[in-house]
Length: 94
Image (cartoon, rainbow, N blue to C red; front, side):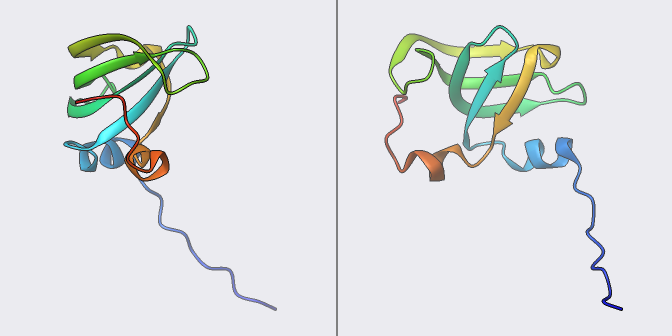
């Protein structure tokens, strides 16, 4: 009988805290999408983003540039913390 590998659970809050200083992608419940540099987060997944840009849905085109914003954690559907790698350097911020 094959042995099962035990997978150590990862805390989502820990992943977010480790992403501070990196560019992340955030999708909200209303369908809006944002990218920006994660400046801070807390235990309720509130996010503070610097150089924040709202994107046109389904594109990488900037819709609005906000600068520094606070996104309420209860509105977040998902966060991509590896977004800089996935985007390959073509980020509409800065």
